[in-house]
Amino acid sequence: MAVQRPRIPYGRQLIEEDDIREVVDCLRGDFLTQGPRVRGFEDALCEATGAAHAVAVCNGTAALHLAAVALGVRKGDIGVVPAVTFLSSAHCLRYCDADVEFVDVEPDTGLVSLASLETTLRDLGARGRSPKVVVPVDLTGQPADWSRVNTLARRSGARVLLDAAHSLGATAEMGGAAKRVGESGADAVTLSFHPVKHVTTAEGGAVLTNDEGLYRDLVELRTFGMHKDPARFERDASDPFVGPWYYETKVLAFNYRLSDIHSALGSSQLKKLSRFVGRRREIARAYDAALDAPPLRGRLSPLRRHAGRESAYHLYVAQVADAGSVESTAAERRKLFLHLAERDIHCQVHYVPLPWQPYYRALAGSDGGVGREYPGAAGYYAASLSLPMFPRMENAEIDRVIEALRQWAE
Ligand SMILES: *Cc1c(COP(=O)(O)O)cnc(C)c1O
Image 1: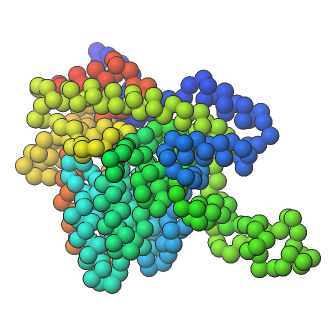
Image 2: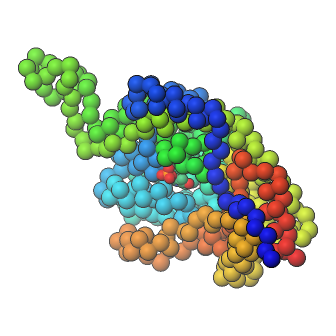
Image 3: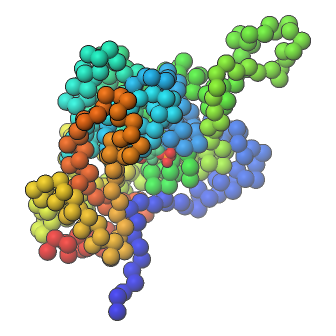
């Protein structure tokens, strides 16, 4: 008879009693939304990331959309996005009616390929279609090459929107110092607080920026595009229709606010960021050691790590060995996924390449992207499997995953 074993997911939240108390306190207070806890959470985000400004919003996708609008992405503009990321990194540009140009990724990290980025930017420039924005993604939690991406993007006149949904707590060496996501040099940086991410607000996200003007625009765009600044009113202050209640809007914008309830949870969770990331790194070291020893050595490998970059391990991706073709490698990866699922270990695959999605394939014809190939993305996707990785994972659960991996390899 099969032994029932508790299910191990690939990721899940860790909510503790003090988190619950903060939420309950908020519910007992005066403000459920637009109160002091939102600002408190934003201040804590600045503290944790090194950013000058943070704008909390209702989810990470809204953060990307708001940032794209604030960076001036409009109909007919082009945004450059790596071929392997979550849908939102590209959808945010489509919400602005902009065209998406995908670039290939490194097959052994999933991070944007600088060679592919450089070629794509050059090709776009030659067609007189320089992009408005480049969207690097710190896939799995390892920072992309922030300084090179910033340089290449700006050389072609583009602004940089960093999707840091995976990398809160990561650092990358720039100019001899370890920089956090808020110090990446991007114009805007977005975070997500979905329960599988480093800290959670249930649903939630944020945009970080060091640009004062961009910050003011983001705040206004978050709340319908309303403002109460008399200096910018079209009506004169002496107008009887104007008074302390008066507001104006010049743009069509959104209600993308985060509530005080969510912010209370976020502030409480954020205090634990270094403990949570520390535990993620411990789990990564345990997987590393297992993958570097028989029978797994040569069968399953960790992603390549770039020197000077410390991953925050939103994901621990292991890659099955090249089986001769992407199809055979993908078949081997599927076998491993199913082998683990049979043992109640529920991994994930992050992500199906975006250019493969029917939605983006249907669009490719209109943007000259026809026939472009993404061998790095195909190779990355074929081999990759995200092993369970979450701060409340117990040592016995890590052992169970490693034991199941060894059974597959033997
Ligand atoms: C989680 C995630 C988002 C957005 O997340 P929401 O679920 O909208 O909060 C965006 N990009 C990446 C890479 C993500 O992993």
